[in-house]
Length: 199
Image (cartoon, rainbow, N blue to C red):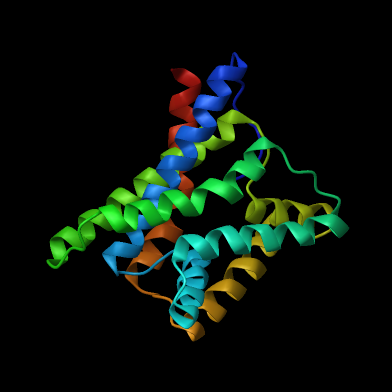
């Protein structure tokens, strides 16, 4: 999740975008984890930590988000309401979805979970960006490194390859879902942002 690119009319509308986006993003994480077809890089890391400790994925989403904020200090990044809300709520919504959604057995249902997850995360990202209330902690780290001199592409690659590798070594699920997410999330997010501008 990155910073504001879509103007919105009022503070209540921005809050609605923010919290709807966080709820849907968490739901998307939960569905992708439940698909067991492969997570996005950060959630491979969160799941790997969960496997090793017995704590929930949502707990690790919260703890890692808070820890990442420490690295914002030397990068002179400033959190917003969206940043703090992201840390507190995203893991809760992910855990709630994992708990509520039936674990699918059939491959077709697992694929349905995966595809729904990618669409939900893309739509949620567009909502969150549209709120303009600060980047998520992980994206703030990326943009902070960009301000320090790295290109966005290089900063993102270093961070996501790093957490993916560590998460896989810890026992997180890497698979076709990881590739589908990587290939589809950018174009889908861009599409939903464009649709929001038209709406």
